Image (cartoon, rainbow, N blue to C red; front, side, top):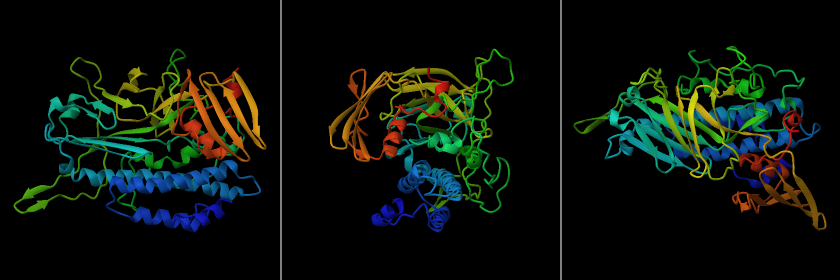
Length: 452
């Protein structure tokens, strides 16, 4: 059915179930050069739709519709598409940083710009003048901001806040919750075969010399996201009195996407010499700025302060947990982040980090469980209204034949999430849309461990 729908759409995009088509698509895009952020955002829309189709097949197709080999292949395509998309954002970032004069602020002399669409918000600031009094900045169009330690304010550094509405870091069983072979730690499923994920951080990559090096560790994440290893909440060395630092992804899930917060090296800038504009070209790709936090003037550790504006199309029922991605162990962690201040009314959160991290805001996956009440009311032939009263929300879903429509989500008597209500969709799409919006009313196999 999916292949037939793709054939009828005739939109020029590859069929993700045909290896030759998807490999050709990725190969051609990998070779493309000099793309800007807007072009990457346009291609991102295609990539996300391809990933969605593959996730649908993994979750909804019966065993007699796809083989185990195809299942492994589809997961591999998802990971490759995710990594390629992030690589392209790094390449576009470097291209933008080579022409900082186009975005120079007449007041501070530094550069900054915000580029956004429905999937991604791209914010970047370049420290061209290196003056200590300009150590903080707020991206007005996005609401995100930062304050740098004095040492960084005097350095040739750029700061990027790349917020994606999707999570391409967590293991696949978290991203497509319901994947049967990665459902939880009690699973007896064997680990999937290793694959070549490229160079480890610090290693040289000879075959693709232009692969961006920032953040280098994120580019080697594919295998770790396939399986759940290291994702569970565990007591770590250091005494029983310490709180666990590694996140249990069965209990806490990222909501509202991922924030890639990076300190980057400013590449050589163009210099006007007479009628010529000259720039030194370095063949190293995008480079991370080697920031090592020292001590502030008051003797405390010099930390980076970050303020994030929370997305409007997501609900946080409680104060979210701020976690950072650990690329070495392929897990979310809560250490390294302090002084968290949450402003629910203003929809913002401020915190300090000892280094530059990729972070996410996590919410209890089961806070709307158990159900308080539910009712299925017939409204016609093969048609009904399902009303579910959860702990914090009341949800109404219209059901007709094999389609469903979210008609209402009410929190404390107020209607919310208008961007996904009133649209007929498949049960798969509805489930994904509600989870993305922070309304998880779908128990998993492991949920009895967390819900009375």
